[in-house]
Length: 233
Image (cartoon, rainbow, N blue to C red; front, side):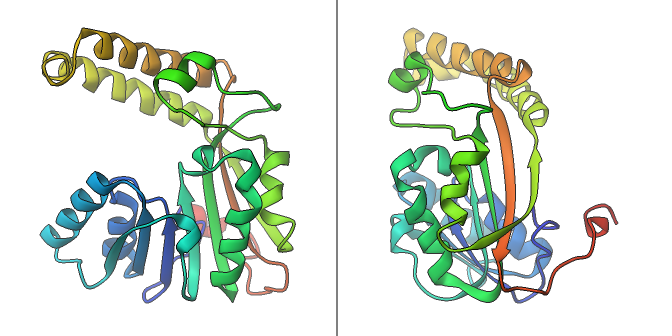
């Protein structure tokens, strides 16, 4: 993702949904970017701040416990990984408006999201037990983020098989720590989470779910790479 965004030292990055903070730390440590990350999970913000402090990156990375719609300031890069699925179909244009108001004229953006090949609601069991309110969009539906602001889509990549492999690793690690997880929660939680991970592997392997990365910029930006060579150098 950093190569796709052609991240450079000193770039100001805003992240909508930072999870446990790993991407922000990588962008700061490996690329010299200055990152501001938003998240509504208190536990994740606390963990991310502790990680930044341990790595000596508190001056480069700022974690903010707030909704993505409250993002303000001006940035060279907008990035969002694994959050669009939870924004809600009716709020895609709001996310696009946030990117529009905060990106510089030559700003770049990347949205990474689980998706589908055709519109379909979330599996009802996953909706109830794992991700209430989630909706994986199609590429056509994702365009509601970009079209109102006249963003240009520069690159689209589907990484669904990579995510299937990621889930295989998650499931293996989960099974290694199953006794600990059961003590923390209960046997019902253990069965539910194993079913979720195994079912997700099947969904990505059979193409029921996709994993899209969409790179975009302003339509007036001509500071563009002429090829994808920078991705593989």
